[in-house]
Length: 219
Image 1: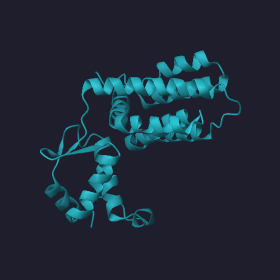
Image 2: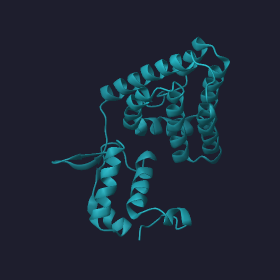
Image 3: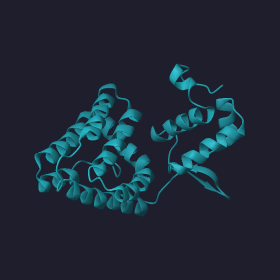
Image 4: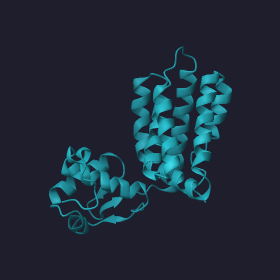
């Protein structure tokens, strides 16, 4: 039996692989496992009380999500990007988001429901100090932001960038919550949403550029 996991109906419906994947994902995004940390299979099979087969499948799925990397010589480790890679990925994310906003705000009848749902989830995470929920809501917000452009190929290009950055985005969000206030980040994301509704592209791009995407990563 996997230890430390709820046994309610929602979790019973999940497979053993899904349970282990979710627990390890939580460990990584919450900082319990840091970038570069080695993942030792023997320790995890004992911790979860499982065989190697479901654990390895869980690690494979985490690799697809951009959270762990497999190396013939180094084994499995939490993904660790170089500072240059992080800079380049955030710059690429910014370029794609700016383009998405430019396209979206030239259209009529924007569907803001996914954006609003993500904001509601961000607010709930801030109220309960649930860092994992906040990180997931933050990721959903940015996907919804790019989704406003209604361009399938743009979203397909954007999603892998966010996957590679999700650990660093979560780290930035967690540090802000501890050093400042979760309400500050929520306020900035709401300001971006309101700027989009206001219809002024210049203001929306300004809010996007100043919404604190990585301000706590280098401190």
